[in-house]
Amino acid sequence: MTKLSKRLAELPGYPMEKIPAIKRRLIQQGVDLIDVGAGDADFAPPPIAVEALNRAARDPAMSRYGFQIGYPGFRESAARYLGRRFGLTIDPFTELQPLLGSKEGIAHLAMAVLDPGDVAVVPEPGYAVYHGGTVLSGATPYCQPLTPRTDFLLELEELPADVIRRARLVYLNYPNNPTAAVAPKDYLTRTIEFCRRHDILIVYDNPYCEVTYDGYVAPSIFEIEGARDVAVEFHSMSKSFCMTGWRLAFAVGRPDLIAALARVKNYIDTGAFLALQVAGAAVLEHAEELSRDYAERFRERRDAMVTALRAEGFETEAPRATMYLWIPLPEGLASAAFQQRALEEVGVVTLPGTAFGAGAEGFFRIALTVATPRLEEAAQRLGKVLAAV
Image (cartoon, rainbow, N blue to C red; front, side):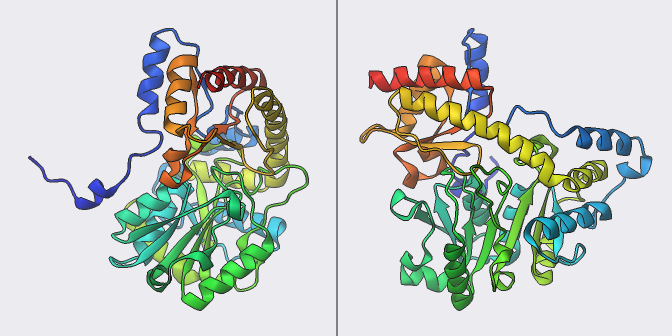
């Protein structure tokens, strides 16, 4: 029998891996399923993206290898977007790298900068790739809980001294998945100062920067002085522009770090489909306008769902960003047990807090990814489960 690697054995179960099979079984049984689990909105992608893709796909040159340079226009559009939106001056060819979704870029950057014996600080709850990418790089993840006490901010000063000494990388994600927390600029300032003192790289995962509400404007970490010394920021077309399946994103950072990421990727992929990059460039030229429309539609869903959940007895806050609600459960009610009952008894797919790490027990996540009437129906069904426990 083939022996599998120790690194594979160290990977925790992926949060979504079992849900598709369970959904298929329940649908075959005739269950009216409402899926608010995955952060995969039902809105159509921007028409400008579809039109640009259609035109580009007819050009035979767009079907050839893009390699890591990709379509130059995508790099240039991304740099112009960063300039308009955040006031940044970015060299599109030395400080920016196209990606097949930010997920792979985050994992591959870990492979470029971490060695066995190094520690990466992983927020818990957090996106599974932070933990998984660290393990696959051969380094050691140190999971630090995000709690209401710190407004779900990762406070590096609270880490044990031996972890700080070995830490080479920390993952930050604000606006945050799954908690929907946002990071004040003073928090980013002191976090950058800490990482500069201790030579820790910040992986700043920023895919929700345009999904914001009530006047809140999410920053780039590069708006903060000193960030370019210690950070790589990831932007994605997936969430802000409802292009999850297109798998297109970009990383921004110091030339040496971007070059290191590209070097790893040279051995793993040959770049995103060039026609997709043409479409991404078209979207980024109108990013603010397009994302504003999506954010308003998400806000309408947020308001309706918060009202509906509160009516059912859930203590739900209205987040200032992301497409998620992070909802506390009554003390003693395990999130996995609640999720299982919601799925099997009332046909609602949610994600338990423990899907994002053991430190997230006591919460569950809802994604605002179906139409408002279905969200309200989901809230009513979840209320039945809550009333029965």
